[in-house]
Length: 353
Ligand SMILES: *[C@@H]1O[C@H](CO)[C@@H](O)[C@H](O)[C@H]1NC(C)=O
Ligand SMILES: *[C@@H]1O[C@H](CO)[C@@H](O)[C@H](O)[C@H]1NC(C)=O
Image 1 (spheres, rainbow, N blue to C red):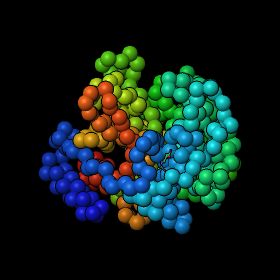
Image 2 (tube, rainbow, N blue to C red):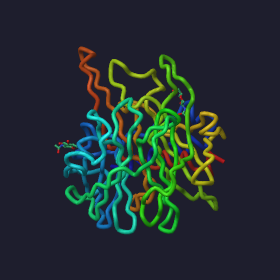
Image 3 (cartoon, rainbow, N blue to C red):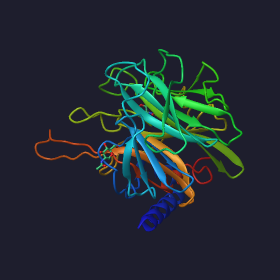
Image 4 (tube, helix red, strand yellow):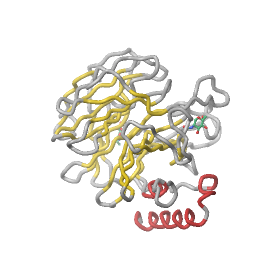
């Protein structure tokens, strides 16, 4: 079932792209989320997904002191295993704090899970790190703050570690609302901060209607991909209003959505498909937006799935369940794996030269 719906959307999109590339953006449709069974709904926010060497998938997500779940495949069945940091992190920034947006990577046999400690609207957040050799609850050692300095330009949330290969430098992005996404570097042998300075990668200065502050750019995720003889660094990010709930929903189009920019270098400059600079010209190419029952997708990550033999984007979304009276509206968040349709749209060979 997975394969046929997937192939169908891929073929449909290819035919469509080939037939009328100019109209792709205006009229495009998004593939529906792939099936997800087991623990997929009820507050799975900002998922970070990794496959262990024995083939089992693990998912870390916001809330519940970083909830850990595992599954035999991306589509499930997902089983909740427990908290990464039971009792909370070492970091204390406020009594109102929560632990958000984990980002897990395997480096030299050790899993590093970065996480943010914050609450909505707070700017003096911290990014911390915990390590484990198995990913299982009970195996994690919390090392506390990474020590990235505070700044009025960013907020220390939404960490993402990017390392192209085991001999490459380690880039680390974060942020943020305020001036958007920033990047610093980590020391490859100690995984500690290599520098206290950071560079701004992406920002959106547009002030959406009905709002007095600029649109939010956050939740960055870097991924590299070779296209022909060229290697590109893609910067995916979540744009817009992340966590608004009825009746205070953002104007249509201003709610969370996934954007992408790319560069020939890990640190930019990143440009979108139309050639706009993603730091200075509010650039960003829309990858995934609300459609059908999928509301405000974001908190995404990208991975190469060696079973499917293709890159996969996974994300959370809210499902708006309108019932009578309208005030009884719930939202569910789901981890959903998706498929190449998004990735095909990023292939410069056919549509992005
Ligand atoms: C599903 O996972 C969440 C954490 O993400 C947990 O709070 C909840 O208890 C789990 N539900 C079940 C039925 O295991
Ligand atoms: C910038 O913000 C505006 C207003 O919310 C939005 O319409 C646009 O899609 C955003 N652009 C990017 C690249 O995030």
